[in-house]
Structures are given as C-alpha cells and as structure tokens.
Amino acid sequence: MQTGMEIWDEIKASFREGSVITRLIYVNLSVFLIFRLLQVVFFLSGSDFTLMRWFELPASFELFIRQPWSLVTYMFLHFDFLHILFNLLVLYWFGRIFMDYYNPAQLLGLYVAGGLAGGVFYILAYNLFPVFSTAVPFTWLLGASASIIAILIAAAFTDPNRAVHLMLIGKIPLKYLALFMVVSYIIGISGANAGGKLAHLGGVVAGYGFVALLRKGRDFASPISGFIDNIRPKKQSGKKFRIIHRQPPRDDYEYNRQKASDHKELNRILDKIAEKGYDSLTKDEKETLFRHGK
Image (cartoon, rainbow, N blue to C red; front, side, top):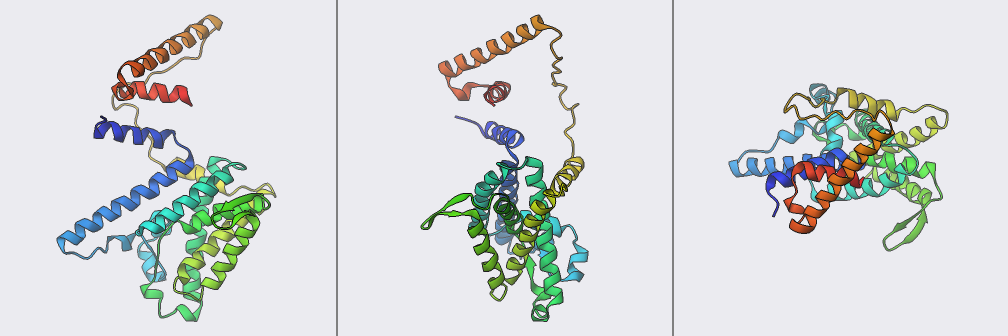
C-alpha cells in the first residue's frame, strides 16, 4: 500500500510531466480544496470567512485598486463544487479540441487572456451601465468560465463544422454550440448572474480575437505564456546535488552502449514489478518507468 508521501510524489510527477490542460485542472482543484478547507476552519472557529474576498474580482473600481491582483486570481477561484466540476469538464473537453490545432503555450496564454478580458468586461459594464449602479459595491466575480469560454470559442472559429456530441442532443457542429452559448450570455445579462454573463462575453471576444489576429500573423497568446514562464520561480538545483548530467553520445559505440544500459535498467524495473508489484518501486524507478513510457 502506498504511503502519503508516495502518493504526493506521484501527484507532483503527474503535474510536472502532464499537459497544460492537466496543470490547469490541478491548479484550479488545488485552489478550490485549499479555500474549502480554510472555510471549514473558519466555520469551526466561529469566524466569518472573508478571506476569499481578497482574491475575488470586485465590480467596484475603488475596491479593485486595493486588490489589483484579483484580476488574475479570480480566474482560478471556485467555491461551489458543481461550478468547478462543470468548468473543468468543459476545459478538458474543449481544451483537447483546441490542442488539435494549437500548442500548449497558446492554450495557457489564451486561458489567461480570456480571464483578463472577462474581468475587464465585467468591471467596465458594472461601472458604465446605470442599471448596475446600486449593485457595484456588493458584487464580486470568481471562476474560470471566461477563460474556458475563450478556448471554446477559439476552437469553434478555427473548425466551425467540427461535430461535437452533446448528451440528449447528439452531434452538432461546433459553430452552433458556440452561437447558442453567445446568445444565452447576451440574454442572461438581464438575469441573476449578470456579472458572470458579461465576463463570458469578454471570453468570447478574446477567443475570437485570438483566431482573427493569428490569421493575420499576430499571436498574442504565446507571449503571455512566455511571460508567465519567465516570472515563475525556477527550481533550485543545489538542494540535494542529485542532478545527473547526460552528455550527448560522442560516437555510435557510445550511443549504443548508453541505449543498452537504459534498456537493461528498464528490464530490471519491469522484472521487479512482476515479482513484487508496482508499489515496491522507489521514486527514481517510477520516474525512470514513466520517462520510458512517454
């Protein structure tokens, strides 16, 4: 039976080696679990759970200036289980379609761009249209919907006639699904979740803009992903001094020797699994097996 540390190591390995869709799902799930657990702690202590307010996006300009980071954090933040479940399912389904035409950097960049566009649409609309004036001080936005809608819309404009299968409906072209969603967002502005629908429309604009500009040779998504990669903390190599530097083979003999050595190690690990089971492998052996299985 695996220990907690082994399970945690496998989760970290799957995050590190997983696709950009996998990583986005992990990030959203992790944030969701952290805040739900914190909510339990606050509940048991008899305190109000106001911490989330610092990461949700306020409609008020005055409040937004105090927490400008919320324009980014809100797009990774969920509190209701059904909300995050639906969002992550849509991200998985349509993210895979998007990846049939574009690369991981573009998906990550468009996810962020869609969230930013959704947040801007939401704030501007609540402060420009008089109907929202009384609600501005008490309205907050959270969720990845605008980001995910941007990915869906980009996929729809890229291959509008691609068929998708919907439960209870059957196969329909992606363009009709996108059109239905856009119309529902516009109609929904007069409903109870006006802020969410406005943010969705921002995601629609980002998704369409991505495809339209890319056709003109301008890609705004990849630079966003590159910026995120540059500001991400880099893993320090001096922690345990266990880094193995593999030199490129100098000739055919060296290449064949190295290849035979790798093959021999893989066979040893497979024999160990057959004899003692997968749980008997060390962390390094699991990483070696995972690397050869890619």
